Amino acid sequence: MNHLISVLVENKPGVLARVATMFARRGFNIHSLTVGPTAEEGMSRMTVVADTPEVEQITKQLYKLVHTVKVTEFEPGQAVVRELMLVKINADPKRRSEVLNAASVFDASAVDIGSSSLTFQVTGTPEMLADFLEMMRPYGVSALVKSGRIALAKNSKTKAAAGP
Image (cartoon, rainbow, N blue to C red; front, side, top):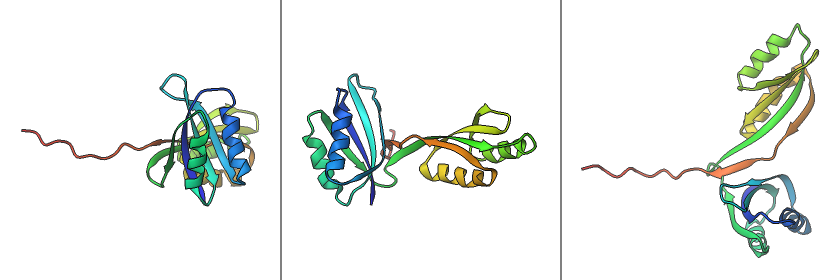
């Protein structure tokens, strides 16, 4: 089963390698892994999507790594999740407007226009990107690259205090 795990770590050399090695030693496949700086100086956030039957064991192992600060597993609906995709679509000049209209349904941005192709940038949920790709397949997908997932916890919904 795929799990979405956020790992807050100190931004030190070798931390990414130790995390990836820990997953590999236990035979867990990483489907995506993204790392980037946080608002806090000297910290990075790793977002890992991994196929693991026991996320509790992974969490314990991650905390054993020296530079791990916090580990959070996101259940479905607990986080805002996004990916970025660049996709090159075959589009001769006769069909270009048709492809652009279809892409506009997904708010895709044309970031490169060639003589026989269009390259789009699409940002959204993994499901939305999959839907965009399905819509574009009939035109011909000639190249594709996706980032890994990034996620942040959703704000908790609390009732506002009643006024006087």
